[in-house]
Image (cartoon, rainbow, N blue to C red; front, side, top):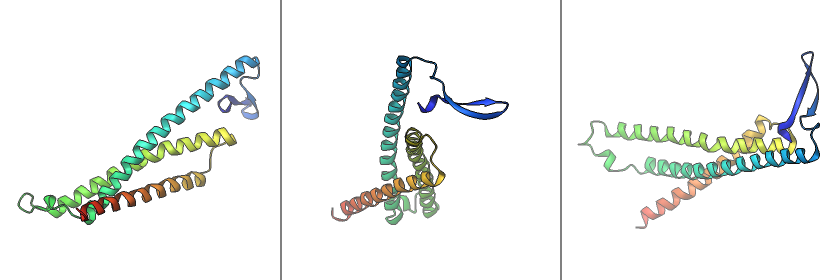
Length: 161
């Protein structure tokens, strides 16, 4: 019943916490509990789906960016088509990098929200910024490992074909 604890203000100061459902019967309290647990469960499903989809996209974007950075595509360096092909290639790398930062934000945001919800449910308080940072770092390490594996697989497919 995380959401139903409200601080009581008396003369501008919080004097005690009370449950908003303490005047309800046990069956009404049970319904409230089931309702908020269903909301948490639904939010958890949504956050997991969003995090999975965006993390897959982020891994693929990273691998493509690394591959294109180390193996410049010949079609983008065609000198007769553009005045400054190397500048165009660098601009495309820059745009892809910006896209990766946006995807990383979209990936980490639901994961951090899920972590906050778990801390509220388990400890009845928000996680500290250090805990959030460590959790985000753990996720980024998994994404970096996955990116390296996808890059090596793409490199292997290119070299041995």
